[in-house]
Amino acid sequence: MTVQKTISSRAWAEMLLLAMIWGGSFLSIRIALDEIGPLTSVAHRTFWAMCALWIVVLCMRLPIPRAPRIWIGFLGMGLLNNVIPFGLMAWGQLHIETGLTSILNAATAIFGVLVAALFFADERMTLRKGVGVGLGFLGVATAIGLDNFRSFDIRSLAQVAIIAGTISYALAGAWARTFLSGLAPQVAAAGMLTGSTLIAVPLARLSEGPLTLALDPSTLVAIGYYAIIATAGAYLLYYRVLAMAGAGNLMLVTLLIAPVAITLGAMVRHEALGLNAYAGFALLALGLIILDGRVWAMIRPRHVDRIPPHR
Figure 1 (spheres, rainbow, N blue to C red):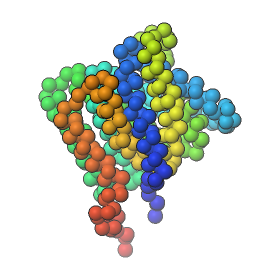
Figure 2 (cartoon, rainbow, N blue to C red):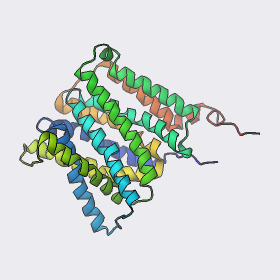
Figure 3 (cartoon, rainbow, N blue to C red):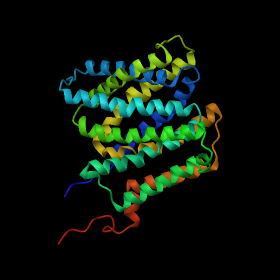
Figure 4 (spheres, rainbow, N blue to C red):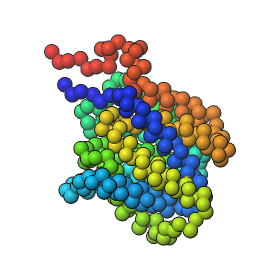
């Protein structure tokens, strides 16, 4: 019988720290977007984070992988976990609130569980996970609001772009476990960001012009935060939690990010969200709590979430 991945207290603590760091990234990205384009923001984020992490790798004298399969893994991970979702979400944030972006980002956990169940025997779908996923999808639909689809406009398109980004994140979790397991977190993160930079910098230059640091000080501070702290530093935690908790469980961090981002958006940019956004987040939170399994274990008999053995 395959042992299922669970979330330890240490993994929860590191996920909480990761959520606080990433919650601030939504605000810093939105500040930077007042002056630079979405692809340029992605290029800055991946390039400076890549430089920081390779310095860490060299200082720690960690072995640099040479196998082509691993570098293909880096390139794919850079595309799925950085270029696609960073770009889509940055563009989406130009048209919707920081807090709503973070709520929709929480759907990453739902898609992460589904993708992990498709690819990994130790993260299979169970009754508990099915209930959690169903509530999560209901939460996403509530947060978006059905009226947005009746009158499809740039705002609703921005929300769809963010959902597409969450699907890319979910695929990235499975990709990382398949191609990058066993690597030191520092090497995995640096390699992934190298793959991202090789794609993002040329794209940004072609569409929005060359990168420059001749920017407003607030923009430079924002770039520094989301590149060095919310990317380079956060990905060191990301790969640690991935190893401890698994690809599907790792996506639960998106539940913790939303309250941080909503609070910062309200305090700094005076953003207000509708009741449907909060109701959607509540349903998402309930679904993700069920996915975690601890509350479920207290209220359900032990045999309910298991498949009976064949006789």
